[in-house]
Image 1 (tube, rainbow, N blue to C red):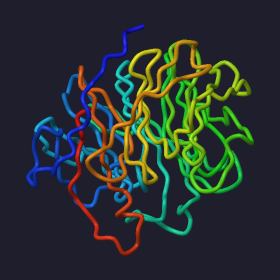
Image 2 (cartoon, rainbow, N blue to C red):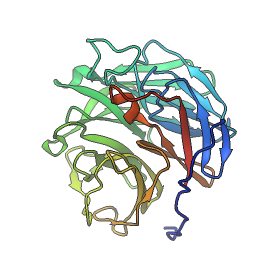
Image 3 (tube, helix red, strand yellow):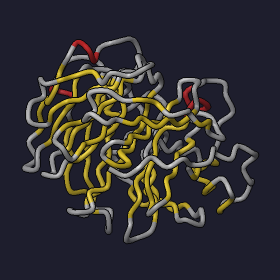
Image 4 (cartoon, rainbow, N blue to C red):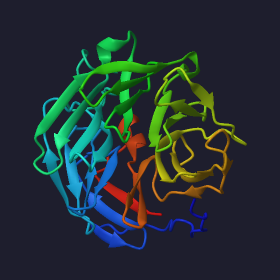
Length: 313
C-alpha cells in the first residue's frame, strides 16, 4: 500500500475565460453539454466527457479543446463513463433526468441503460436496456468494470445494482432495502481488485462493500461521519478512495482504509472552484475533478452555462 501523501488544496480563484490550461486545471467549452462523467485515455491522451443535456460523448485535449466524438440516438443522456483499456471499450451509463434535448415521457426518470463503444472509432459495440429488469423509476448513474470484464451499474431511483457479464448477459446483481431512500440513492461505484465493489449512496452518505462473487454479501463501511452528496469515486490505490461530493458540499474528500474497507477514516475535505463537481479521473500522475455545474441545468430559472473545468487535484 502506498503511503498517503499530503497534497495542496485546490486553487479556488477565478477561472480564466478562454479555453486552455490554468493553474486550476483545464477549462473547456461545450455548448450546454453538462458533462457528468469523465474518463482518461492514456494512449490518445484525451479525456472522454459525457453529457446530461445532449447525450453526446466528446473528447477534451489537455489544452482544453473539445470535439464531439459519439453522437448516437441511444444516448438520451450520458452519465458515468468507464474506459476498459484492456478491451478498448468506452462504457457509458444512460438515463434521463428530464433535462435532455432528447427527453420524452417514455424515458424521463424511467431509463436505465448501458452502452459500449469502440474507444478508437466510436462505433457502438453493445447496448443493454436495463429498465425492464426491475419495476420502478430509473436512472443509470455510474458504472465500473472488474478484471473479468463484468460491468456493474448503479440505479439512483431503484434499489439495485445491475451487472452485464463478459458474455453480455444482463441481470440484477444486488438488491437491498439499504439502497432505498428519497431522491437520489446509489451513485458512485468502483471495483476493488480484491473482489468487491465500493458503492456510495448519495443522499445518506453511506459507503457499501459488496462482494463481486455474491451480490447478497453487502456490508456498510464504518465511517466517522456520513459522506453526503457522494457522487463519482476513484480508487487511487487499494486503501485510498477519492470521493467527489456535491448536494451543496462542492468538495472532494479522501477516505483511507487499513482493514480491507470494513472501515475508513476521512481526510480533510477540499472545496472545488465551481458548483456541482460530479466525478474524478486520473491522467498519468495527475488527478482531475469535473466541475459539471449541473445545478444550473436542473434549476429551472438558472442561467445555463457552456464552460466547464477539469480541476487539477
